[in-house]
Image (cartoon, rainbow, N blue to C red; front, side):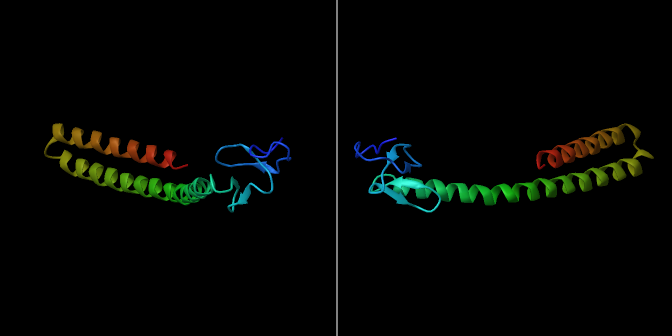
Length: 116
């Protein structure tokens, strides 16, 4: 492969932004990749920063889903207990609360499985 700007020179790599071949004179090491000097440096730095932030957010997502699953189980349990206590005097209404509790448990299961 040849350098895009200097076709007579062999390329030492490709730009992480534009994917063009770059020689030693044109290449700039921006940390996690090579960029075209004075053309693609800022964009490659921005892409590297974006990837780093996404890795951090990805690690936090599982915690958020797990926390939501716990909240769903607690809410579902409270609603089911309320329905059982309420069942003695209002049979028809308690079925609504049992259904609502079941929905909370399903939501908790969905949250838990989404975080894995």
